[in-house]
Image (cartoon, rainbow, N blue to C red):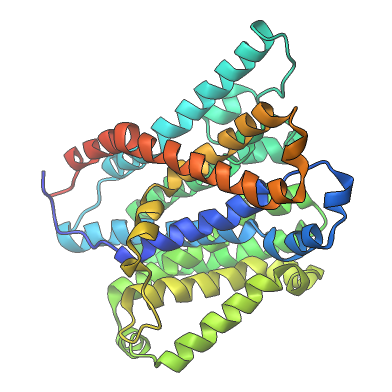
Length: 372
């Protein structure tokens, strides 16, 4: 089925990769050497570069925007929306690699204990992983389990939002805007109540749903293209430049800006506004400062970014195990340059192969499930 023509946001692939890089940088500098951890270089990294939460912020805002756009676009072209097809297409993109990583985790634990006699970190009960509720498991039990699976809490949050968004736009479409505004306020209220509960603040879905709703509101605004939309798309370059400068400063001084309780509470709202602006500017504005879509290599890395996200923790785990007896791996040169580069290259290689020979063939099945 060819279905209806769908809009492809060519300038949003590269930002996906850049968001992954923010997450990757937080995970990639690892050492137990006290001298290195006490160095000014490590202190700079910890204060200004270890801000992976910003990557999660972008992913949730972008997901809210894209999912809402996809559903509303289907309504506009077909006057209907197939909830089963929507869910099935989401599953075909997310589930194969997700469940492959769970299988790898099970095999690693079995091999380590049965063949090597080693004791490795355990896995959460499969019931939490199979129901995409890992984030709530972490809230309740902590994150002391197999390293590369910890990151999958964010997939749980997104899958929960995908499921809810399909239901919302299927049965409550006329109430979409006020409901999204309510979700933004509810998320802020939750963050106020959970301000001193770090696990809930970081992993509870209520802490993130405001980002998703913000992205949804942006998609609703853009797809309906009222008068304000036409004015905003013509905003001058100096305005765009000013916002990007503020955003860069926000990144550089993130931990200093959001150190207080008040700023911690509004951090996700601030991120939603910055990333909403970037999505709008890159997608719809006429006067660009630059366009991410013109950087072909970054576009490709953006397309395989789901694999980059899923595999990078596994690559880090294997790399640590393979080099743990090498003293040279704990020098400043290795910690800050060699290790990150090697792991980065390996992650790209594995993700590219996975995308070409595993993910893409499965994704091609989505074309069978189009509303016409």
